[in-house]
Amino acid sequence: MTTPKRIKLESTNEVETTAETEKIMAPSESTEKETSISKKQDSVSSRKRFTTAKDRRDHLNKNFRNRKGNRDDDNKQQNWNNERNKIEDKGDSNESKEPRKPKKKVAVLVGFCGTGYQGMQINRDAKTIEEDLFKAFVAAGAVSKDNSDDPKKVGLMRAARTDKGINENLPNQIRMWGFVKVIRSFHAKTLCDSRIYEYLLPTYVFIPPEKEFNSIQSDIETQKVFVDVPIATSEEMIEKRKYRISQETIEYVRQGFNEYKGTHNYHNFTIGRSPQEKSCSRYIVNSQISDPKLINDVEWISIKIHGQSFMLHQIRKMVSLIVMIVRTRTPISLIEKTFTQVKINIPKAPALGLLLERPVFDSYNKKARDQGKDVIDYDIYQEQIDKFKDNYIYSKIFEEELAENTFQNWLNAVDQHTERDYGYLNSEGIIPESSIVKHGERQKYYNNQCKKGKKNHQSHNYV
Image (cartoon, rainbow, N blue to C red; front, top):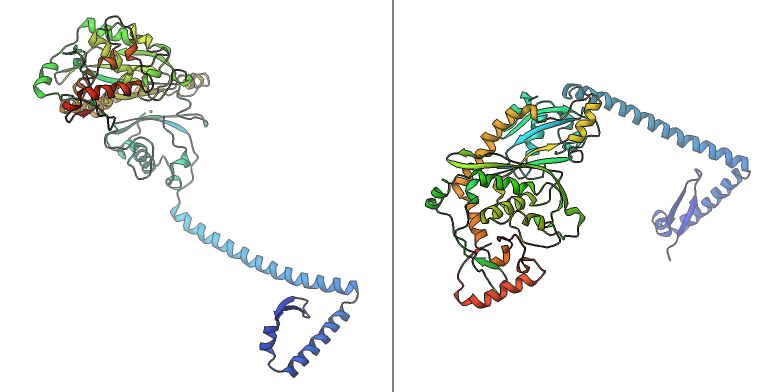
């Protein structure tokens, strides 16, 4: 059996070897015996040399100094190499690196039209507004080359004197109005205490519906709901776009939006929320309804809603409810009933007319004024902002509405729903039991309708 054994050499280093190794090194028995005797003699000699503790201590100290000396020499050589590399690198960097400048946090006031972009926030493999903004900051020297590889290095966040250098590096549909130096802890999202949204609406949407609600059909197998939704024709739209809203109607619209003012439970104005959730409580500061304005022979109004915060689809549903109330002459008193625990179905108005007017930093501005610092104020750029909106935002909304008849097609879909869906649109302003959304019951109703009309079912549009 081959077993390992230890051999102590003069240097006191211990190594492991095996009988296999010894056989290779000692091919004859006589040689093996001589080697064995020699090893025994060496072992005895070693033991005699270090018989006292002082001898062993002196030997170990000497050996330790040798090893330490070798390490010190290696360290000195490595340090010298590092210093030489640093000098060489420094020489190269002096040629390529720009002078370091102190960082200053600023709030940048921008406006943009999102057409052709895949959102605002920087996202890998997507064309975004922030990506183009950041590239312009780098090109204009607002962000150093050292920080140009990662927007996080400069704390880019979403939330203005116009800087010509930056605007020259931006596409026309993105503009920078100016910037304001802010405190180091400034955060565009958390310090924004309210927002103003604008919704553009053609006034013909207030024309009363031409017919009563129709019944719907559903497929009992797929459980998909089908309705016949007519597409607006060019001839129809020529007549509808001749409509001009009366002063009485515009005041009714203003009265309706005024009901939203204050703190209310907006669980009916979003999706997937129950009336008991505290997060559904939202505060609306005010709303402003402009006088009607003719654009390409079509009359439009601007609706601005100032709120502390908004939920998903909230503004579009707020606009939708007012449109349905006004065109059906339902009492305004219905609106306060939507803030109760009753669950109803409110459709979304088209996304086409919605835009963010501006974020508001009133709380931050108050502290800034008290400390003698600049405030974040969009009003000083209002003339430039209005011109930009006319050229790049409003014009695109008007063009798309003319080409697609977006708002009329939405109204056609709304008018095809049953009384069960929007039965709360009535002369008394009450919410009937049949219009209250209860879990599971609505699908049973659709299935019953399907059983009645399945034989006559043909292809329909989804709603």
